[in-house]
Image 1 (cartoon, rainbow, N blue to C red):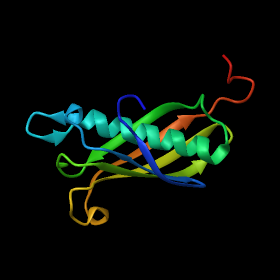
Image 2: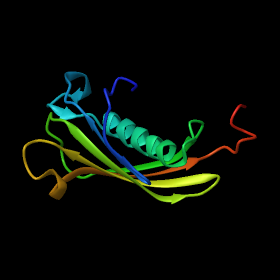
Image 3: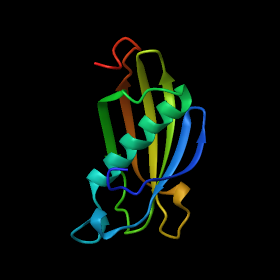
Image 4: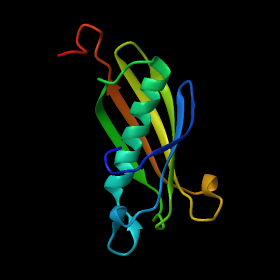
Length: 128
């Protein structure tokens, strides 16, 4: 998906976990994962969680993305866990924790946290 090589690991209502395998194309000088890679990952997993939960929503568009980079990720797989905090007819709000699968206890040490808001076009607007 968009050069991320996104691999979905778990899907359930209002939740999606995915992995992006380590790749040199996602590295910045100094050997850390690039911020835009983590932003794209966060955007993709919430969008996919919307679609998986609603069974539609492909036309949903990001209206806000806020990300906090919490620690420097090593060049390892990234794991993102998305939760839909609000899912209405016209909008959705998601929360994403991103972890580095660097051999430690990833769940205790997130590398980034993001919140995202999406506009969900109604059936009458989906084709425009």
